[in-house]
Length: 214
Length: 109
Image (spheres, each protein chain N blue to C red):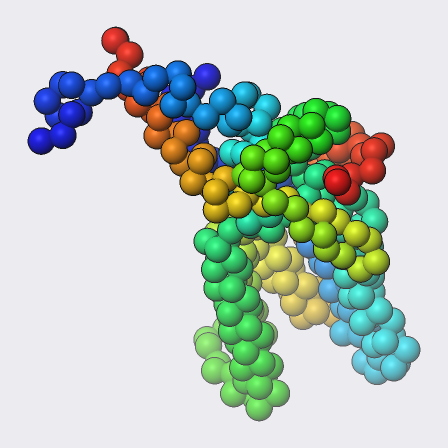
């Protein structure tokens, strides 16, 4: 028996165990794919149909639906329920505030775009400024997620998103072709998440007893 | 100057160690519950690697001692039993940690 029980490490491991199922990785990977679909169906055609726009938004809803269903029916019965202490709750509130500010930031960027307030730079297309703003915003958001949720892969995923968006806009400028980076990064994230999910399902079988003790 | 500083530091006697918490499986349960607000049976099974029967038996003892309390709740339509350390349980665990630290600190090198 050790003389010292490292409770901070124990708490960190307990918290991280709620992120080891891989569904966040799969979700973030799947969210990249509708961007490609948007490019192909909405951005490239000169006059995209309403059906194409609706279909694209539909594709954005698929990862959300899959995430919620997997969490509810596959993960929760195996992982169990846990409520963490006040320090974690404070971190979550701070993250919530940061996310709200992020939405505000997006609104500002959209406003700048809509009002054509884009500053012009030598030899740089207009979209470079927008991509730069979105890129900075994404790096900040993903870094905050990584920090507040003890989820270090989010640092990397932030850069995956930034590079994917740069690739998307470059393809938009060209006017044709499928952007490779979003597909590649989505594939990597989904593959990694799937490995974690399979490991999770193997190590966390469904409880065979009635788990509501007492 | 206290006992520790003047070298007259005394280890707690075996009777002073809380044997209910000292048992390894229960120590794992209490330690895991001490770092969260509350957790259900499945989460504790995963964190402690105890079987359903073992966990249930140890939790009964901890509940009888007033160290653990249970709260029934629903997530959607599914019932869950959340387990949490009582104030008494947290205080007993803190005392246990201090006593054990004294025991080990007082061992010769």
